[in-house]
Image 1 (cartoon, helix red, strand yellow):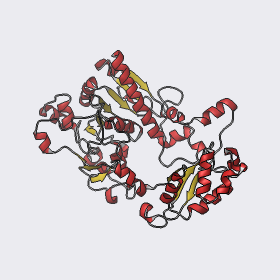
Image 2 (cartoon, helix red, strand yellow; image 1 turned 45 degrees about the horizontal axis):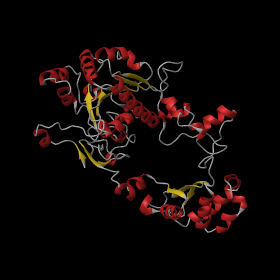
Image 3 (cartoon, rainbow, N blue to C red; image 1 turned 180 degrees about the vertical axis):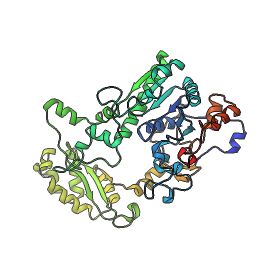
Image 4 (cartoon, one colour; image 1 turned 120 degrees about the vertical axis):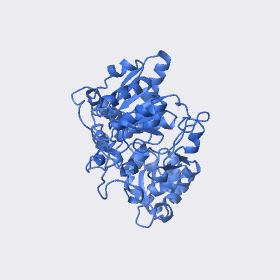
Length: 449
């Protein structure tokens, strides 16, 4: 179980937050909020980088939730916001494991001075405010380079820095819209549909993590830092492939096709028998998804669902032919899947060489025996949340394994540690910052009544 380092471990004199992994020597100041930026640093923290999450008591990461929560809003353990809801929100906790929390107002003169001292030692500074906001806060590339000429500054506003819409505000839901994803999502002759999780955020986060690695490699080779200007909107567009090329080459705009695939047939999601063991009580939808590409796969599907004669029927020998008969094929598949649970259908189809998978709800995902066998769900112990499972890492290095070292931190939990360990501040200097309100462990809203 990943847990907060104990007092006993501190007593040995060893650094309780010493990192392990391929990025263990990298220090990142994470000034980002919500999902896109924190997701990038989460990935890098899993690989051993030291991530210092910088927030102010009056401007906390918004996904921490409200200091005075509204009933029914937000996900908390046992649906209870508790005494410190800003530390218990599920959204915040899933994105900020392996990080050190520094709660410091970097707009105050004393906080600004300390932040620049940290920036002087940092490898990377990352922010995802609206275009130009970090500059207006006084943290321009020039200001950071004045204290650290080789720093890597990552700025990832919704539409990038500059351009006619560079100052637009945006969240993942808007990025999906502008990036062309939503126009492709939904059923034919129906309205566009957003995805369930606002893909614009994690897409930008994955891109940013990759670009940071590239910038670190460049600095190792040349000794020079970089300014990474990432547009979340442009990153989202990069995840559209065929649709963009189709328009560029022919001027045609791709239609919405629901669960079907543009190049494989049959394909889709098919209703199954209820599966209380895997998905929950009856009433929870049970489905299996599949897609058929080659003639061999089609033969395996046709035989498995009890219609081997279709495997040799010339009318179904090509993707185009099967697409022309898609509705009829769907009816035959559904007749078969309704007699099986999703896992049963998946296993039979996979045995026949057909790409198929259970449509897993969150109960199925978290309790999946395959994922448990691979250790994907480590348990962490968070001071305000307690013990809970958290999604692990999806890669496994043989020589420099990363992993989940500890849970997401409470607000300001590591302020003293960061200032002592990285900057060598004395207890008196730290107390002076706390006495003036530059450092805090509680939302300003509560302190001001």
